[in-house]
Amino acid sequence: MNVLRNSVRLLGNLGEDPKVRRFDGGKVVAHFNLATNEIYRDSHGEKQSETTWHRLVAWGKQAEIAEKHLKKGSEISILGKLTNRSWEDKNGEKQYMTEVVINSMLMLDKNSN
Image 1 (tube, one colour):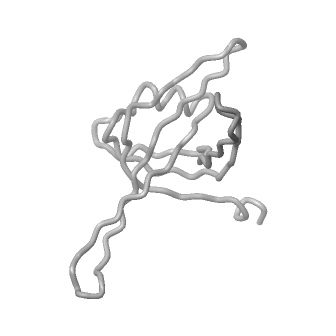
Image 2: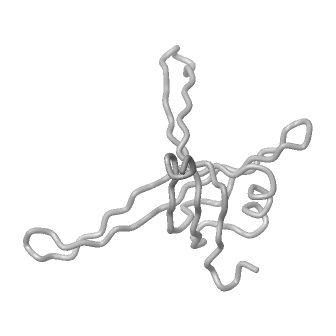
Image 3: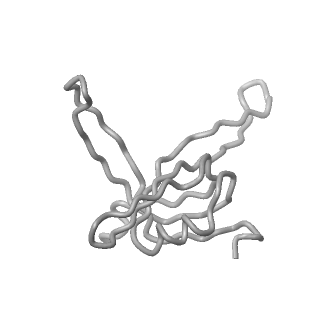
């Protein structure tokens, strides 16, 4: 049951190519944005579309797969968990970011072998 406490499932399209960094010791990380779209009807019956952007992080083998197979526009489905991090910017102000750390990923494009 603990897995359900912090679980995120998303289906959408990449807004950019993955940005990959390699660290000393062999660790690999990829960062990229995913757009999810919700279509609904407003109070006047008009069709509306709302896009939400999500910051994704992939580590290790998932990062290498993302680097090799994903590009801007790729459709993927992910399962992950929400994480929050904070840092001080160059002005000394505290900044916050919420990210989804990918546990598993399914590439849905036909040409992403």
